[in-house]
Length: 213
Ligand SMILES: Nc1ncnc2c1ncn2[C@@H]1O[C@H](COP(=O)(O)OP(=O)(O)OP(=O)(O)O)[C@@H](O)[C@H]1O
Ligand SMILES: Nc1nc2c(ncn2[C@@H]2O[C@H](COP(=O)(O)O)[C@@H](O)[C@H]2O)c(=O)[nH]1
Figure (spheres, rainbow, N blue to C red):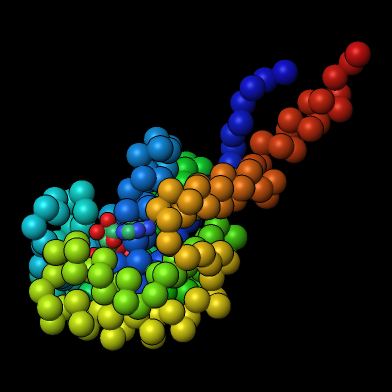
């Protein structure tokens, strides 16, 4: 019997939350633990933060460049979030899907909605809730990457984002980080194992059924 486990359809794993709930931290750990998982690096018009690396954390572009990319239909989805524009470039995602690879998205609820509409068989939507809005504020302040006005705007927007959690496939509270990470990893592993993603199963089954014993 062959040990071949291809072809397969990749998972588009979308992780969304209000700003500060911890999705980027959880996504980074998932990436570190899963060599085959590819991060969708978004384009944004937001200014780069201290500690961020261009083309690793985001592709930072001007408003004009972002608009040009919209006009060229270069995004699978894009949205206005907290006063800036963010979008998921289409080409790397198409490439990954064609090769049966999995892609991770750290995006907002609008992007999750749009990708699920366009790729209903591939998208898996996970929403992360904060333990409380007070804790959300504490995390944003402790992160020390945004000024007070930006933090306030993000906290004010949090309720509007939390209100959309019903459209997600999985929802959990990021209270204890390790427990939350285990939950996210379990979701990813279970989704990877779904039979409809593993197109090789039919060939494998036939080989077993034809095996002479
Ligand atoms: N379970 C947790 N307990 C305490 N602190 C946490 C937990 N998870 C994440 N954090 C911290 O909270 C801060 C915000 O986390 P992170 O940047 O991952 O949030 P985010 O949801 O990605 O925010 P944004 O949408 O603005 O990118 C970080 O300083 C991170 O280390
Ligand atoms: N719809 C999209 N949302 C995105 C994308 N990339 C990031 N985001 C979300 O924006 C906010 C703010 O991010 P920050 O890095 O400025 O703190 C957060 O919710 C991100 O997940 C995208 O391509 N599309």
